[in-house]
Length: 101
Image (cartoon, rainbow, N blue to C red; front, side, top):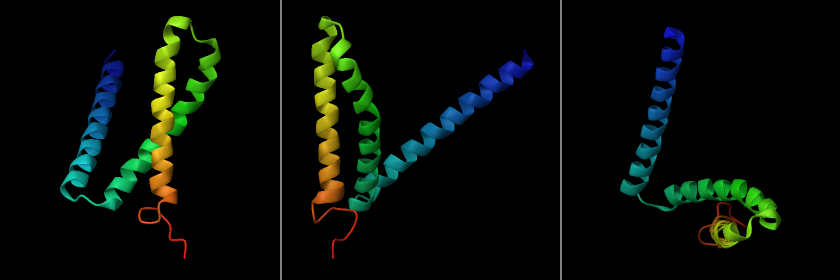
């Protein structure tokens, strides 16, 4: 029982540390605004979009009719977010992560 309590406490501490680290990253980006910080956030959102789009698209044909509109809206938002991230990270000359010269 004591072992389970210690394990539970250590998991809470790890989660709290993760939240603190993430909030520090957002705070630093807010204080030192610039493309470098925005690009990092945008890359993170793109990764999140890529993870979400596959399950959304695979569930679309089999979703119950009363959930279909919500899933279509979510899928559209995720696709639009991913398209914006791809454009600004890889296509737009002034913001892309690599130089094409």
